[in-house]
Amino acid sequence: MHDINLLPTEYGRKTHTIKSIILLLLAIFAFLLFVIFGIINPIKKRDEYRQQKELIQQREHSLSELEEKYIEDQNVLEELHERLESLSDLKVSTPIYWYKILKTINRSLPQGTSLNQFTCDNTTILLYGSCTHDKLSATYLRNLKNKTYFSEVRIEKLIYHQNDKVDFIIRCVLNQNTMEDDHY
Amino acid sequence: MSYYKIYLRPILNEIGFNMRELSLLQETITEILHKEKELERIRNNIVHTEKLLNDRIDELPDEVDAYDLIYLLSQAEKNSKLMRHSLIFLEPAYHGDYEEHSVRFSFTSDYNGFLAFLETLNSLPNRPTISNMQISFNSDEIKTNTSVEVPEQTKQEKYDLKVETTLNFYVKGKK
Image (tube, rainbow over all chains, first blue to last red; front, side):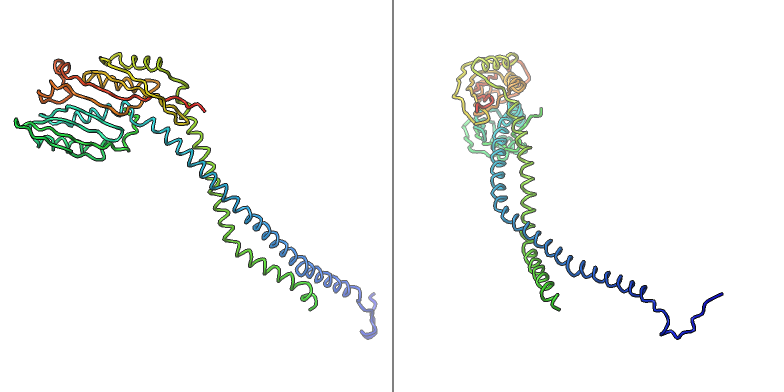
């Protein structure tokens, strides 16, 4: 059997508790949202930017220090490279390099041409020779020019003798790129 | 309203101010990062170059004197048929990491003998470098108008080369 309340609704028992609980929860929720997004978040964000700024400002101060270190290290590196370069000179102008140069000079000689003297400092070779015709000295020049060992080859002097013999002086500038040679 | 005025607005103002400053500092940050990368690259390069340098220095002998040079040259002369004229010991040159001990060597040889000498010099453990070479060719051979490299034995013997050259030997520098 069911109980029926015949009283008008305004006299009926009010469901205050559930409503007020819901309202309270909503209020608490809204308050929490406000605290989180209205109070904590802005402070967090502000502190974050503040920290970032301070960090960068600190690093900005270290930039000049960084630049000093950079210049210092660059100088050290340059000095090391210079030392390494100077040690590389020990691999330049080796006996085998001169072996190849002499072979090249000799093999480039056309028939009817001979050498009297060969002098060289560390960059230039002077070849003193004789031939039966000046065209032969020109051929010799061409032959030498076609070799990679020399960056420049030119005839310095031709002396014509009465018996058709021609003396020549040829200057060959050594190609620095081929001077370091360990291969044989 | 008072919440906004008293609390939020100053915070937002500060955030805005900091953001503007940060964007201005962005260039500095990029520069710093770039410099840091460069510095790291240079430091790696220094380590690598130092290693290379030490390796090269380690390859050099600790010391060499006239005794060693005479011994080394006599080793090189064995198969080269050289007729020695003089050996002048020049002042050593100091280059920091290494020392250069030079000798001015004067001798006579035929073409093939001289090439053999160069080959042997190249195979020495303490390989020298060569500078300031002067070669005079025997005038008898000029009259024959042939190349220096002559296959016949008779012509080879005729064709003497008078050679004067500087041989540079290297040792570790004394720090």
